[in-house]
Length: 103
Image 1 (cartoon, rainbow, N blue to C red):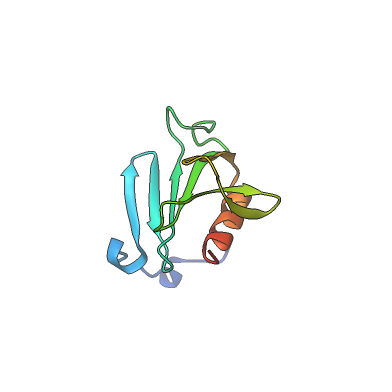
Image 2 (cartoon, rainbow, N blue to C red):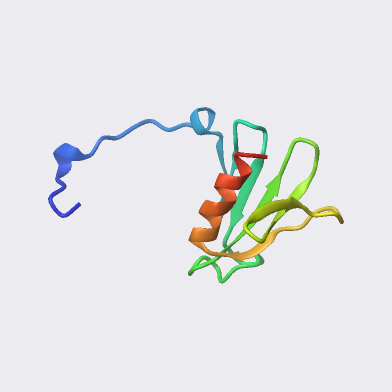
């Protein structure tokens, strides 16, 4: 990356329709995956995070209304209704996204 210059940078028009992203607030976003699973990432005031310094609150839901939590490196349905994954690190978010693709 040290030898990167402006000739190596390309700008793409990325739209919500292209990738399924939607801005929730200036402090979060959600994305709808191809399998109709929604992943929401919030890191602002009132979230279960350190306000985005190193963690975020992450919710995972499917089209049937199930909410999923990360447990033992698996996404499992939360049996009591809605629940979020609190204080998720960037590495844990990548794990959640990869698992959410497989629901």
